[in-house]
Length: 445
Image (cartoon, rainbow, N blue to C red; front, side):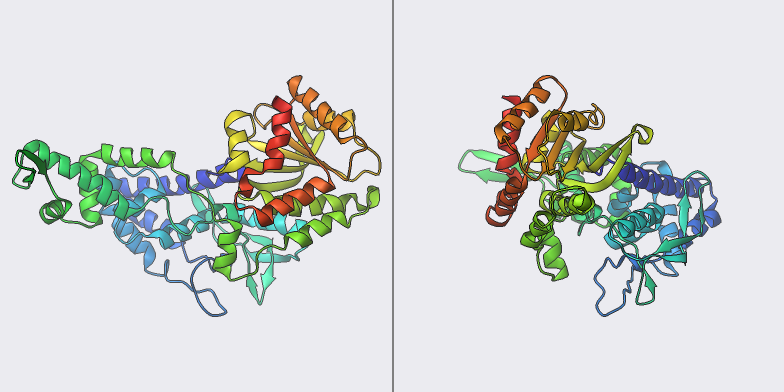
């Protein structure tokens, strides 16, 4: 759900580890499987969880968990048969594997990309790093083994920290074992009993003449039982049930936590939009404040457009470093304007160029941004500047660029940024971004 190099790497690592463990179990190499699983521990350095008090401490993965997970997988007919394909499938059928264990396993496996992400964020936000910190276990997909190194990480109150992109944090799994059992397993069994006209079939009268046949889910549970062992057996016998469930989830919106959600969970104050805007407006036009301006614009836009635009990459090099983009966003396109753009135009990424000029911007700046576009990277961008001598003329130049097939560029100045902040703070439907929608419609009309 995160179409980026970071997301692809995390998916590859998790799938590789899970498949490695399952293959070892199917080959009878149980000690090797236990050894791989035994490395997994609660990753307290992320500080994600429900622990109270000053220290993170959880109950998901501990000393006995490796053998418990191995035992559950090795005794699962679905795992032995190859029916289980992904780590999240286990939450449906494997007893003892729950959302917190899935989360801890995943965090352990993707620790290396999280370390790199943490280092990048610390460098960008001037957070000090300590050298020679024990990395913790790192999974090598190539060698299919754990290894340890010494890395640079931030230390707070004597404990190392791992930063996690908020776009990948959820407070529930997309897959739900109760939902799968009630609405897929039991519904399938109801049909089986009806088709067989079994003793579970009841005749329900509707009026004087009409009657209806039914099988209650309560009766099905009484006959077949419940629990993940039952789900495991019935899924193995009817693999199409799992396939149908997973297919139903492919198009289901699995929305990330919003900034409001995170604020409520953390008990913190909401973002100070006025302060973020002032950080931009206080920059003096000209070269001396160019870096400060770019960083201030990134801070404002990243907050305003989350969770639709995420994973900002400042000073993103392309074409082997021959070209550079001020800010590159991944377009998640969950709701509103950016979802609509993602559906109709190449916009896997949205590119932002920041022009803290004292002079007016013109065709060269448009050509510079459009030169960063490609069908695979995306052909939608935003150019941010302080003001325009003739705003309507520049907007017409943006339209010319679009009609020439060179991409879609939305132009914003200081007044437009102020308007976006006003919309964010006063309009509950802010994700529709009427200002951006209006500018984009001008490009394509």
